[in-house]
Amino acid sequence: MTTIRKGACHCRTVQYAAEFPDERLVASRCNCSMCAMKGAVMVYVPVDAVAVTAGEDLLDCYSFNTGAAKHRFCSVCGIHLFHQARSDPDKYAINTATLEGVDPYDDFAIVPVFDGRNHSSDNGGVRRKAGDMHFEATLDEMWPNDLI
Image (tube, rainbow, N blue to C red; front, side):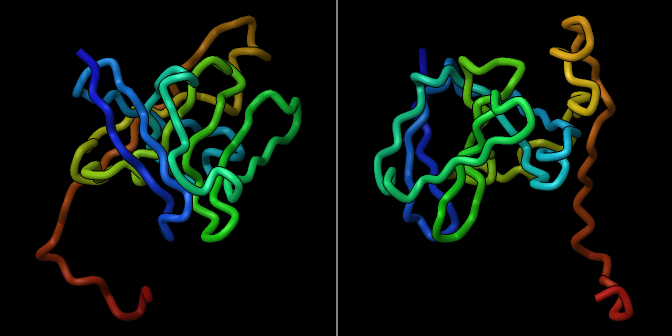
């Protein structure tokens, strides 16, 4: 049984639908230079499981270094929606924050981080885990004004 999930960028100019193999989302992050800067929690689906339903003409692409990874983002608001990873170009890594009904903080308290700095394509095919990202809600704590 598959699950269709809709997603969009911040300004909703670019919208998409993605077909997931089941309801459960398995999230991860990466510590490569690009992923570390964008900070997104990602879930993977086959490339052909994603259909852009609006704003395809405003979906832009960024690629660097080997050119294998294709990072797709809205050219209006700049939000990263999904990318084809260098390690698995047959899949899209979808930014969970762009999926309707998914909250990367509430839905994934612990997220494994893969070692993209030492990419498996440059490391004899070995994919390593760099660590885990943890989120613990502390809604009752006040944020110190001197840190703003």
